[in-house]
Image 1 (tube, helix red, strand yellow):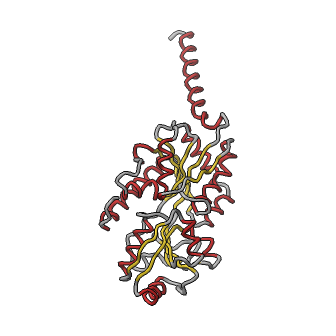
Image 2 (cartoon, one colour):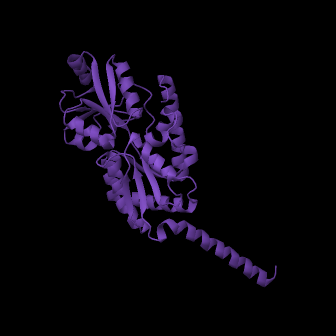
Image 3 (cartoon, one colour):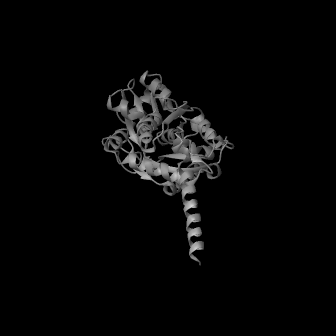
Length: 327
């Protein structure tokens, strides 16, 4: 190859590299804000987590990171909005397992297909769900709660859940079967309104995530009496797992992560993932998230995608075994 052709080839490669870098930064370098969709109302655990991370991500990315609550249908509306968004990195979806892994299993037409419409960006934590009782009950354990339901309602009771056809609702059914109670799940539009009713003693019990319960549990306003997962939680070591209580099958723990519309450039996804990884190394951020009951750990895109698929497969088996029919 002649020197002139060699130089021309080198110039061409350089232009390709610069073009790729420009594409990677298009969502951020022009100063466009990043909108993070949250499928639940303000005041809930997911909303609080999103705002903690948004505050630090804006410093890493150099652009505003805005949390937009698009509440309704257990995150379904937010997921549909993500599908409709342009794949430019300016719109992301911060969610836990329910919206991405569970909804497609319990709905015939959720309006999105995670495998086709979304791409994993980065995960940042796992967590567990729990059963809690309101301050209006004397119960301090699951056995106490069971005895109280039998004494008050002849074995009939209502348990709040943040969304219909969710992991918490399936847990309510299993608890009812285990203790021969007629427990009915009462679906809410997110954990915040459910918690408001628990604090007002309008509902005696609820199942939601540890981040949703932790503040009021620590304040003594509600009492978490059992947790899902393979082990007790560091933030409440005195609370037993459902496995300890004889309710096996709830050991696989859910996740939190960011998703983007399919077609979002890999370079944009990688840049956001790297920024999140840096945020998660900040001690105060880790402390805040840990205090909410999260097990913090960065998951790059491929790891989050794998975690989502495995979780969906696990719960597909549980849901099928329960006899639940997709609505």
